[in-house]
Image 1 (cartoon, rainbow, N blue to C red):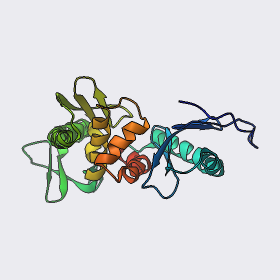
Image 2: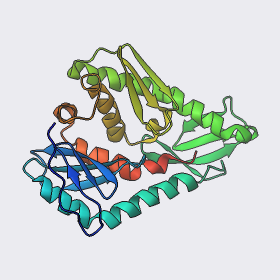
Image 3: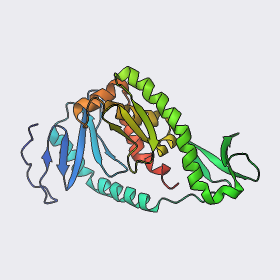
Image 4: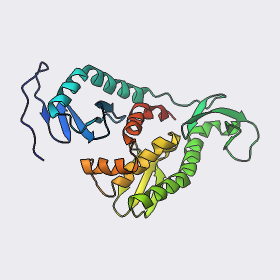
Length: 250
């Protein structure tokens, strides 16, 4: 992949390097995605701190550089903000009325005296046995994992049929900062927290990982594959980067 020459040194004192799929400026590295459907440029700061730009196909690299330079203060502020939010994400207290997400909706917690199981979701409320509060996080994680397994199995198989992907295994587990992962041989894993996301966002995570069965990197071919099956993937990806932090803290 041929790279453009270094641009003149700008006010910040650091050279800029641009290529077809990546832009490096001010010590930051951006993954560049182009689309014929895109009308404007947009910068996304992932919760992991990774940076990406979505731009119309015909936008020149020089325009991308100018766009990023004008947004540098906002970008650095956003990176610091996400870092602080991750460090200070409040832990759940498992008290009456506290909200817990499930498939994008928040349900209030009700503490009950008598219940056959530790946790249920009924009548629009999470019901937790009072004598199980000390194991609250463990109970919720187990509940989310159990419900996420069949949900993601269904989604993976449904989209895999359309994307020409052979699926051997679907697992739900703690993946740290990753929403999902793909391993050779048709094995897919998803973070249990992904079941807290709205369905359309969780579906993007599924299609993203299925596309990796065809392309291991995040090349233009990879994003073209995603776009074939989710034409509106860009806003879903941006929503996840902007709002995914809200599922932290359990």
